[in-house]
Length: 602
Image (cartoon, rainbow, N blue to C red; front, side, top):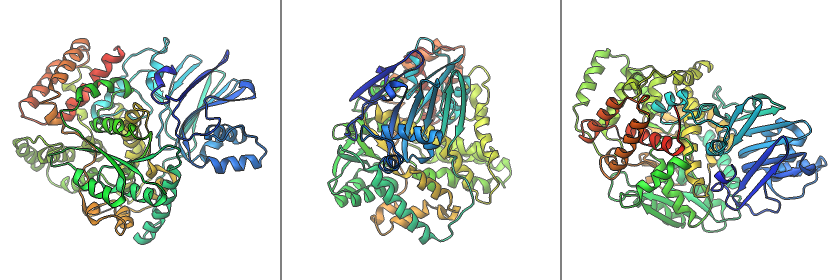
């Protein structure tokens, strides 16, 4: 099981075994501290810890624990977490500032406690078989165990087909779950209990002044990035050319006494290429920069084939492909990088948030008028760009005919629930409805933005964006740290009213206010593009053969579950440029490759 995680920790591996518990861990050396080997034992193995992640306030905690009488044999954050647990038990997790997945054991008490960081930056999976508990940082660590079945989860499939990802706590394997973000789980001699130690914030706004909010965010950003820069290897910055990653670079440059490294992906010759702007940013901050042009000339199919192993479970976010190559590029110079993930979900950066407001007004029109608009749009010539006008406009109107919460996830997803019958032959359990029902449990508010931000932070951020970043980077033994997701910034963002996030067509208002005298004006004005690929075009061109082969296998091996005629029709209509469904086909491609790699059963 440890061998399956060697890419996450190629520098050191360790195993502890006893008649009751067995634990193993693999370590990536980012901070070169004595005693960093894992696992760390207490009292000759009566207690101990295996740990994945970084605790940024471990020095403060260590000093507090020493004052309470604890003795340390190392300078590692791993041992600090163990001593904190011995002192405060499960209350220690709320004291940790960082990203982590952890397992702590007490042999005499026959007790194991698992915990995951607040935002779900680091993964943690588990499976129960009778009184036994299996767990690991990746799904594959469990799949190699002979007692773990590989049966496809219908709950997960229902969500995946619409969302493009699998929301916690489900996974694509029946009987394996994710430990939810901000939660600890205790196994005590065969009995299991769970509890949240931190809840995703959702409350009343406490800021009304934009300058005051920007000033507060300034201090939080500076502190978070200073902590995230703790490393004994060269530090890299992932640049997309947008506001978020450039803001991280700005604060990192202020905090660093040495020249920073930066990395980016370009799409030369495409309308969505950001490379010229990124080069201006690089010149402004004097970074040592590396760039890779992502085009059909690189080994696209080779990388995608690797996804089936390293993605752990299928994720249909096509942005995984540029992140894969970005991680590979980064690995040549460093093993730790900062990224801008999380800012969109905290401060309202996605177009879907504006779409919610547009659709709210459109729903006042008779549905017949919206249907007529849809009919006209479907006659529009399809575009080969990443997401053309006709694609976005059609999706907007289709979502307008849905309930608001269904429309919101539809705009970032693919198949509408009503359309699943065209691709899946048997009824699925409507698990997506359970996910969306979480919004009904939220307190009522006049803030029309807050429920959608909460939903995206809980599911889309944790199970799509952060999962993609973690798996693609760790496949290359690179640790990516998202400073925006310091829980103090998350809590601050939740305290802001909607108009400090979105005003008219301007989004991430408070972040733009903060950075307006710090970044070039061009960066503040630029339209959000982000990492993605021209999926519509590439699946008609350089990836078509791979798609055909994967569909032949998937529909042949799993034809009793998937609708061959419906999927074949969808594919052919895409090839003939009647419709743009590149992201739909991409999700099926990734799913079939994954099922083939892991020999998943129905």
